[in-house]
Length: 157
Image (cartoon, rainbow, N blue to C red):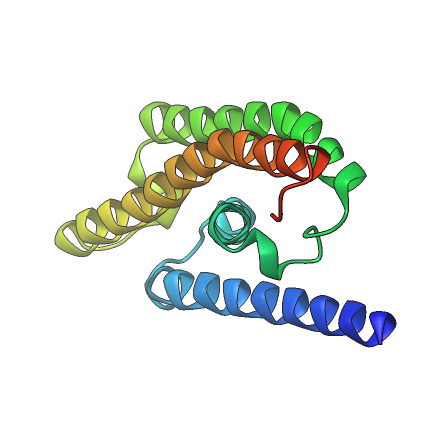
């Protein structure tokens, strides 16, 4: 019974990653259909997947594969420090790239009104999910630590 439950958690986890990836595809579609080149697709997908995953772990931790794995929760707490540093560094790189190279380097040569609207869209999507993943990534270690503490003290998590 326990291995069937473990397989179910893994299947649900994979389904959530697939849904996150599909959300990333839906958000990247306007950029892909209109821009000649966009060097920040990996960053966009990283932010979307991490935002959805971190937010899900904060609110639905009981229904994830981490629910009963205390050592993994502690590992995730310590792994969040370099992950948050990476997310902030990449967001800074994205903003610096736009400031130094202009919007043409990001979305290519387009008509002025299309260039402005596409650049504003891509910037807003990356900022929304970048900052969202950083905020949820900041909250997640506290939620995981609280969960470990409750289980250690005999409470139901």
